[in-house]
Image 1 (spheres, rainbow, N blue to C red):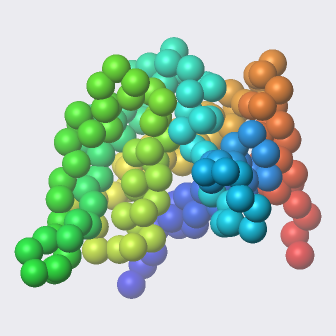
Image 2 (image 1 turned 180 degrees about the horizontal axis):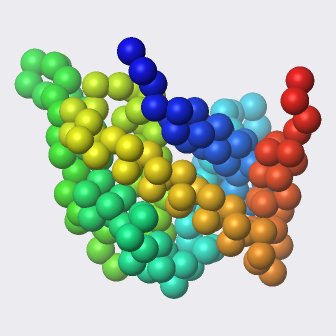
Length: 169
């Protein structure tokens, strides 16, 4: 079996991305009552909101990435008798009304989930395109944060770069 090497690129940037979000205090999803000792989860949507609608409109119009929003990957859902069932996501789920840009990173996360969990039937014909589009989106987010004057976005980029630039072990 041959594995697409882009899968490793996706996992590498995705793991660095999530670690940078968690290391940036402003991007940790808050628990009710700010309870310490709870698991730390990255707040991907806050990053999406801070990047702004214009940034996401540009990516949705880019030929290299528009497929993520127009033809997002499906997902496993619980079907009858608790059996897994494959459900296609429609473009409306990726757009999600007027505030779609506040969830701009979700389609890239969906692709990661499909690759990680496997058996993603609808991805097979467009597998390579969706993986490359996800890598492109994550890379463009990092580039945008590197150039930003926003202190939260800049801190995210610094945390991302500190992981990315580690010497080989």
